[in-house]
Image (cartoon, rainbow, N blue to C red; front, side, top):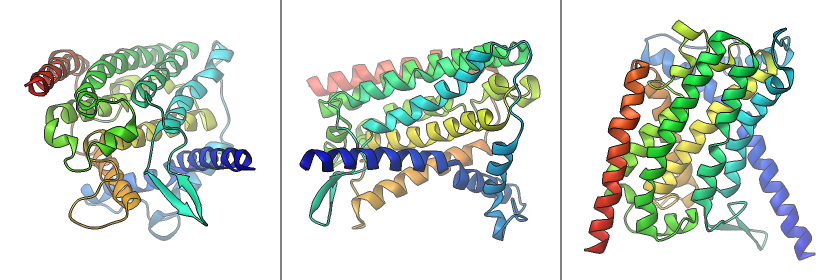
Amino acid sequence: MELAVALGLIVFKVAFLIAILLLLPLPLTWLERKVAGHMQQRMGPMRVGWHGLLQPVADGIKLLTKEDHIPAEADRFLFKLAPILALAPPFLVFVAIPFGESISVLGTEITLYVSNMNVALLFVFAVIGIEVYGVIFGGWAANSKYAVLGSLRTCAQMISYEIPMGFAVIGVVMLAQSMSLLDIVRAQADVWNVVYQPVGFFVFFVAGLAEAQRIPFDLAEAEGDLGAGFHTEYSGIRFAFFMVSEYAIVLLVSVLVVILFFGGWNGVLVPLPPLLWFVLKVAFFVYLFIWFRFTFPRYRYDQLMAIGWKVLLPLSMANIIITGVLLGA
């Protein structure tokens, strides 16, 4: 009986996570358009529903009913596989993400995570690196010059920025003496890591912007010269997969920033429930992603690569050395 209950809880948690991540673009696309509208002194969506609240639903219906077009010269197998490879890794990563310690429901202790891995951080970076294959296949399989250029740009960008992103968290691992995300949050019960690791946080957040391919690092989808980048030839539900993947990455980076540098569900000053603290922190960083999109101009490609290799990588390595020296002292 206990085994059946445990398996049932795991299935429920996984189904709940998938539902949240699949529905995530609905509120986020509306919020993004509204924030953009107010920043640019206009109204944003207003016509479909009250203040445009049903606009994401209309967009979803459009994407689901739009013709699924595949170019005549495309590699059909890779063309169909690419959106799945882009969508699956961000979903799979959330298996190792904790959203809190545990809660009690009807006398049953329920943990707010699917799996507490002792190498969760390593698992996250290993799985999220698979997403680059979806980008490469999406551009290559379409047999379009613009899509190939977009996929090559994205591949170089994602690989380049994953290196400083990985180095940026080594200081956090050194402080917590663990790769378990639960242990990392527990180690911040008194002082958040951002106090000890401001450079690590800066490198991780900037690299996260590039990893999510958001402005000012959205060279992969530069409309002015590529049309839309690696998914130029995609339409309908396959295009929606790429869009959901982008928002899942935005949420994932925000969650990791909160867990690694801002104390996770540990609060400060105001006595709020731990889960509410966690949600508020994540929502703040998701808003930062949206805010940056309509604030900063896009970098040139040479500038983008120079920032990754000449600025962020040396900073992350210096952060590791300084952290090691301070811990040794």
